[in-house]
Amino acid sequence: MNILDELMPLGSVKLTNVKNDTNISLGKGWSYRYEVGDVNMPGNNDHIHLFKTNGSQEYSQNDNGSPKGGPKGGSGPSKKAKKLLKEKTGWDWDAKEQEWLNKIEINGSELGDYVIVYPDGTEMNTRFFPFSMLAILPTDEVIIKMYAEGGTGGQSTSGDIDVYFTPSLMPVPVLQFSPVPSFVSIFGF
Amino acid sequence: MKYYKKYLWLQMHSPDEKLRQEAKTKFRESAKEYGPYFEKIKSQLPEQFLEVFNDMKWFHDFSISSICVNNIAKSTTVKLTIEDDENRFVLKLSDVATISMDIPNKNYWMPSGMKWGYTEFELFEDKWSINILCDINCELEFRFKSISCERFVSK
Image (tube, rainbow over all chains, first blue to last red; front, side, top):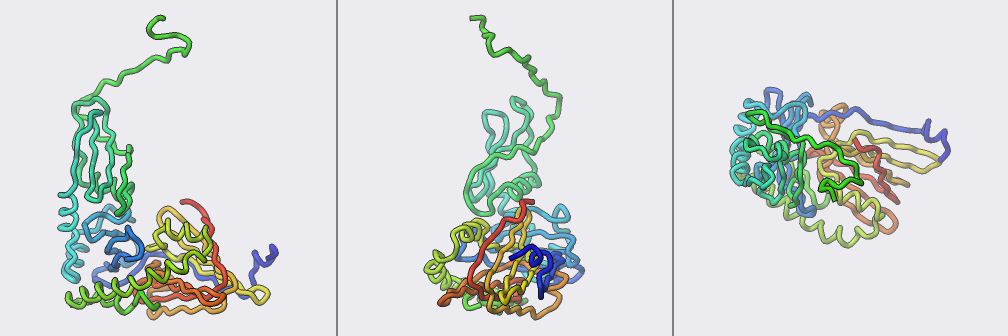
C-alpha cells in the first residue's frame, strides 16, 4: 500500500463517533444491559451495565455484587436509577453490593496497614501511615474503588495498591534520616 | 451467530422472570458448544492476535469506535478500532470477501456506538469469518483471509 492509499483510501467508508448509549430503557433517562459471563472465557462473570441514556454515566456490577470496572461519569448510580432497575428487572444493586462487602475480610498487618481480602481471593494492601497507631479502617467506598480500579474482576490474585491514604486523627511524627555517605559506617567501624 | 444467540440475549431482558432465567440457561448451553469448536481452530489464528484476544477477554465490553472499509486495488481491508478504559486496538482484516451488518435499531448505531459482546470465529477452507454480537441484537460479520491486531495506544 502506498502512502497516497493510506491518506486517501478509495471507496472508504468510515463510521466514527462513539458514546455509550441506550440499550434497554428503564425510563427517566436510564438504561441497562444484562450480560451472562462467557462460558468459554473464564473470568467473565454475569454482570449488568447501567447507563445514563445520554451516555454521560455508566456503572457496571457483577452478579456477585462486585464492581465491574470503575464508575464512568459519576461516583455511582443514583438511588432513582437503582430503584428503576430493581423494579424492572429484580436486580437489587445495593443488596448485591452489601452481600459482597459482607464477605470481605480486613486484616491488620504488622506494618500498620490493612490487608483487604476480597471474596474472589484478591488481596490488596492499604498503605496508611506506617507505625501509626491510628490507622483507620477503609470505608466501603474505598474498598469498592480499590477493587474496581485494581482488582481483576474475578481472577484470584494479590496485589498492593498504595494510592489511598487515610489521614490520622492526630499528627504523626515522621522520622527524618540524614543522608550518610556510603563509605562511612554508621557504627563507626 | 450460531452459538451466541441474540434472541436469547434479548430474552434475558424480558419483564418475565421465568423467561429471563430460561434464556440465561439456554444461552450458556448454546455458547458452551462453541468452546470445543474454537479450541480446534484457534491455533490457526495468528499467535500475536490470539494472545491479545485472550488477554483482553475476547474484547468483551470493548467499544467499537470506528469501522473503516478500504477498497484498494480490488482488495478490501477492514479496520476496526476498538477500545476500553485502558486500551485501544486496531484490528485489521485483510482480503475481506463479505461484510454484513445487522443493526436493527438505528439507535444502537450512529451516533450511539456499540459494545462488543460475544465473538464467534469460523474457519472455512481458506477464509475466516468473525461474527460479533453487540448490544444485544446487533450483529457484525466479516469474512476475511487474515487478521492482525495493533495496539494503537495505551490510554
